[in-house]
Image (cartoon, rainbow over all chains, first blue to last red; front, side, top):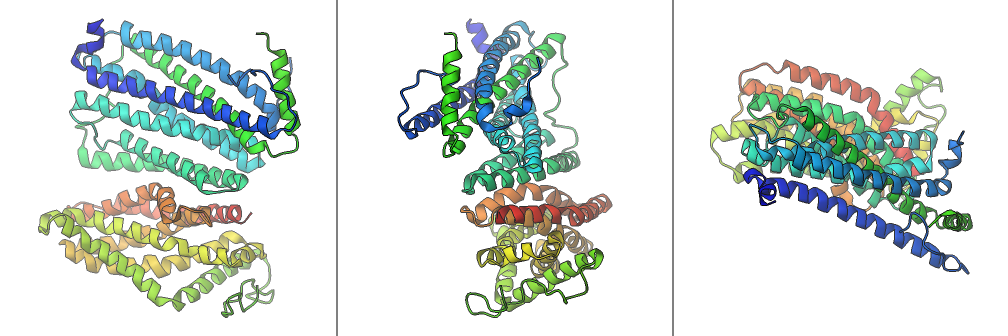
Length: 60
Length: 254
Length: 251
């Protein structure tokens, strides 16, 4: 396992690369989902007399 | 089963389809990424000359390719948006831009970390990296213009035109940077020299690229959902959007 | 709309009269529109010669600052010279671009121009030509004089003038698209620079490369050929893009 992490001595370069990509994609996913949730919440609030709609597909 | 695709050309009716697509491609992306990482970090043999550092190409190449591909697709949507005055096409272009910019930035980052152990420097002004840098500037320009224009429809058309002008310029820019680079550096440093590829390596890169594609489609579809709701919620068919949401909820099995 | 605008200033007539410059037959109206746009903008620019002088002074100052930041040694300067003289030309072009459409936009005359029966791309090309004559051409003339500051010899200096002569119109043509797209937006000059500078890169590469080639004793013909071809394509195609950008801004 530690051999795997060491990446033949190039650990810094390999993990900075893979780490940055993983971090960026995760952050982007979180941001997009938060934006969608916020948009739907504002839509719900704007609509008069709408009963609380249950969790909808695609808005998890 | 014939689907009337035109039914989906209005933002509202496209919304549920985008949701399904985002989910499906998200799952696909996770599967491809899992398989790809397994190949990249475990199965693929260590390179003779570059050691384990070469494994960075399994993220560098996909991100660099996506930066290019996304721009081309954005240009396609932009052409449709201008040609047919189609709101949804412009929204798709708007949804793709941030991911494209991110891919370009990641390509530069991973390229730098690949360059340091392999060629001794984090940054060399070689043709591909410099062109990717300019591509990043083009993405940022589109994002900045979108942000600077208040009226969404005017922003749609302005960004579409800018994207198309940029698309025509990208080959010219690439050619001129390549010319400039070979003139000044000869062939001493070239980030394009990849290790001689075993079949496993090629497979790994292709799987990771497929993962990147699926991820991009998933994120763009999810983002376009937000864009649709944000931009269309003032409209009178608000009710129909809520009905659509309710319909989808009713039909969902779980 | 008429000869007196809101500020009470007498301005050049905006919408060409029907008896202006020939009939509405297509060939003559393209040239007529071009000539009209060109003459009007040159006339307006000539009213504020001080502003043109300031823009040229900006170019001189930027070029003169670089040696202060590096070294006055002739070898270093000769290497830097082409790049500095060209980059400063790019920046000077950026500085003057907002003037191309902004004042017409804010007082509504741009809308009138767009509504007139003359072909908009030709009108826009006329405005761009006027912009080049009042900002690009002075740089072309000034640059060889400043090039002497950078220890560039005669042949290099003439190449500098020639390359700038071919390149600065391309800068004006590309910049016009950016200027039209950013009309009325917040973000000011920075946004325009972000949009336009990446597009300028090939012109910079081939233009500065031409001077550098001559300085190093090599031929600059490939650079000149590419710049020339670029100029022809830009003149033919870009006014249409700029006109579209103007219409987008006016909607």
